[in-house]
Structures are given as C-alpha cells and as structure tokens.
Length: 407
Ligand SMILES: Nc1ncnc2c1ncn2[C@@H]1O[C@H](COP(=O)(O)OP(=O)(O)OP(=O)(O)O)[C@@H](O)[C@H]1O
Ligand SMILES: [Mg+2]
Image (cartoon, rainbow, N blue to C red):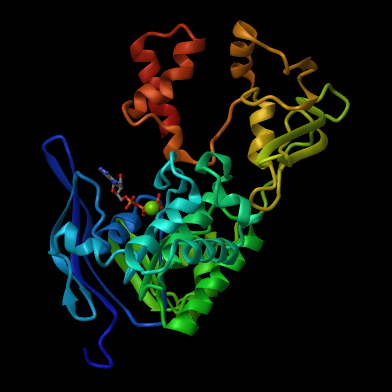
C-alpha cells in the first residue's frame, strides 16, 4: 500500500434489489474514497440508497440484494468478491458498522454485556474478568448510565437511544480502521449526540480511524465531516469538502438541502385554553427494576395538560422517560401512580371495548419504525388495519384511502 492510497475506495458500485422476478437498481455507478482519519458524510433523502451502499461495503446486504458491478477496495485490496467467511474476519476488526436500526440489531435474548463481550471473546485473548471491565469501560465511554448494572440488562430494558449506544460500543470495541455509522445519532438528544460524535473524533485523532457517517442531517454533516457526498436516487450529485459545499454548492439539489436545513417556523392555531383539555396527566409515577433490590424511577410525579388543537413538544435526553410517558398516555403501559384523562374521561382502568374505542381518539407514531411493522404484512395490510377495525368500508374503498394517505 502506498502512503497516499485511500483506506477505502469504492469504484463504480451498482446495487440492485429483487422484488418478485424483477431486479431494480437502486445504486448506480457510485465512486468515492475515504482516507485514514477522515470523516466523510453521506447525505441524502430517505430512500436514496445510503444504507444499501453502507451495507454493501461491509458485505452485509439483504438476501434479495446483489452487486451488479464495481469494486470495494480496502487498503487497495478488492473485498467485493470475498466470501462471508473471509469477510467475518474483517467485520468488527478492521471495518465496523453501526446499523441504522437499533431495535432489530440486538439479540433480544442476550444481555447487552454479553453482546459487547462477544466481539472481544472472538477476537482477543483477554480473560473473562478483563473483558468484563472492558465492556463496562466501553459502555461508560458511549455515555450509558449505570454501566455496572446495565451490562446485565436485556435490550428491551433499554430506551431506543440506549440501544443505539450499545451498538456504537460494539463497533468501537476493537478500534477498527473504518467505522461506517448509519444514522448513529438520530435517536439521541443533542447532548448524547455530541458525546458520540466527539468520541468518533477522538478515535480519528488517536487511532486514525476513518468514519463514513450516513445522515439525513446536512447541518450536522457540515459541522462534523471533512467531506460531504450528496446522494440522490442512488447517484452522487455532488462531493466536496464541507466548507466548500456550504460556500459554493454546485448542484441545485444541494442548494435545496441547505435551504431546508433551516426550516421557517410555521403559523399555528391558537389553542382554546378554556375548553376541557384533550389530554391531562396528573402525578404520573413509574419505575422499572434496575438490578437486584434496585429500582429506577423512570417517571416521577409528572403532570401536564394538552389543550385541544395544540401541539406540545416533549423534550428530554435519551432515557429520560419520554416513550414510557407516551405509552402510559395510550394505555399500553400502566403507571404505578397518578392518572390520565382523555377529553375529560379517565384512561387508566379502561378495558375491552372501551380501550378499543380509545384507539379512535389517540394514535401513536412509533420511534422505531423497523420493529413496529409486521414483516409478513404488506404496507396495504398494515395501513388499512385501523380502517378495518373502525370503519365499514369495502376493500376497494379501503385501498383508495390507504393510497391517499400514503401519497
Ligand atoms: N430489502 C429490500 N428489498 C427491496 N428494496 C429495498 C430493500 N431495502 C431497500 N430497498 C429500496 O432501495 C432504495 C434505497 O433504500 P436505502 O435503505 O438504501 O435508502 P436510505 O438512503 O438509507 O434511506 P433512509 O434515509 O430512509 O434510511 C429504496 O428505494 C428502497 O425502497
Ligand atoms: Mg438508511
């Protein structure tokens, strides 16, 4: 390897997915380089092919995906044709992936400690005790609270942002040459996000780790990355050093992205503060087991009201109880204490038909889209379900409504 050879060189990479008998190409002849210690951001709209590209680089493509052509060179060596067995020697050791989807990427029946430990056990000679302290150190480094207790927790006991940090800990465990981070901080509050990105920066400085940072967030990419690649419809629109991209964007799509990065505030209706509130929560308390004889108070005496026709933002750091509170409002989870009323009627204690009717009034958009959709159902079946439950419509009418709402 010559001193100037890039760590990673992607050349004319084209990737397709099969649906039925049809192959559809979603990434077309993409080429870019990444040097040691460099952070390159891959930015682009949803569905533009960022994750597909990231997965292809590390050789973890979906079962129905294929590479139509192109090369993936790591230190000059084309790894695109390597077998899974050979690639598995590389993954986690020289290249790591922080996957986009924290919900599906952890094993639900293994503790998070065991999952971080696995990579150390496979690739180092450390004793079990030494590995355990490394695991705790890694969990501390990614900013997980109570790491000593958390090692023995299962994924379902963690918030979405905490799971994301466990995946980051696994990716960092062996200080690889290249980390591919697919939306690594999108479930994290700004404080934890900064901590994770600072950690990646430190790794770049200390060990020359290169980072391919996949993100929707152009502002964040500009702040953090050396270079930015703008992706659209599976093609590179523009690739430039971050400062140059902001100062003189070449492509109209890049200019559009830069404008959208600072959206204007929209006008809103004034809520009617005198009417019965849409939601009112009174003194909600909820705790979870943390370890033996130890409990974590997730919600402590939470009270608030949401007026009709108003939008309220629930803001807080990762793990502060936002999702737990939402689940209690919806009747998915029972509070230890306190009460919830919806349009004046108590929610706590609702059962059977009354609980079913509540679903007409209050709906939830989940944090983790991957784990929330049934993989055996088509999008039509998933979206029409509430219509089936609550409306008398023909199949054709339901399909029409689903198409309209999807558009
Ligand atoms: N397993 C799959 N089978 C068929 N098509 C797929 C599959 N995974 C992704 N696609 C399609 O490939 C295209 C690129 O998807 P990809 O997940 O790479 O986008 P992305 O840029 O990562 O989007 P996002 O920002 O939403 O994560 C999309 O059109 C998507 O519908
Ligand atoms: Mg993606």
